[in-house]
Length: 347
Ligand code: NAD
Image (tube, rainbow, N blue to C red):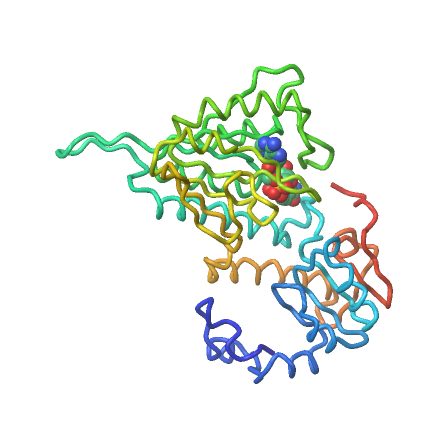
């Protein structure tokens, strides 16, 4: 079943679903009443949570650590909640890793958004009307979104530099045709922590990093920041003086805006222009700005999740809490809160 019009903004009309054998229902209310498994993008609203019932499964982005009251509500309603943001980042679960699918889209879109705000070409050209230098792009944070941004910017012909506190990403950065900015520092770029995620940097390391960015500021045309540390506000890395040192018409796209932003001037969900004419884009809905692509990839992630939830291929849910991936993503089950999960046993 699908709620009428649910796919419209992503370019899929009701008929496309009907042709695929889906029943189109008039309202989400009807769907909540009838469906054994309810699938959404965002966490439920208060009203939707009220409609959940015993034994029903809800699959959505949920952010349980930030949504404790909603978690308790879903538990009390007897629903099983699978949080797509809690799918473990292990190889076997990559096909269900919606965080990576969305980060990939956000990284791509950040470059498109930068280009839309930038008054020149990305690629260098020699034309009869004059020589055009390539745009210089700096990507800060080379996780999934940062690497997607690097790939997109290099494919458009820009000169791309990138920085990350995790030294192991240098090879990935270079393999995508960008230059890795290496800090001359004892225990070199050591912001890495177990599990492949970043930890806060030491004050000395941070100073070195800011010094490097200060040198880059007058030279680069576009800065794309994606630096995040799980469970913490985004580190401030592109400070007011760096914005002031940039050329007018330069563009900053801050993918960390939702977590407070990596740039001092970022305003979440806004595009602001600094006194010296630098454009700072702080949108927090990059995947929604590419709804068709996001829907296709999210749907595939969900399809894989449903396949794993129905191992006997008979459409009957077998919620196997001994499966690391399902266990990790399940945040309420059988009237209990099952978050946080134990650490996964396999890599
Ligand atoms: P993220 O969104 O949490 O962070 C983005 C990037 O910001 C990270 O690369 C991080 O190192 C960087 N960062 C943090 N502080 C910084 C600072 N001060 N300066 C510069 N950069 C800083 O990360 P993510 O994209 O979700 O990926 C995190 C890790 O998980 C990566 O190693 C990624 O390859 C890995 N991963 C693994 C799988 C898997 O299935 N094996 C899937 C997805 C991601």
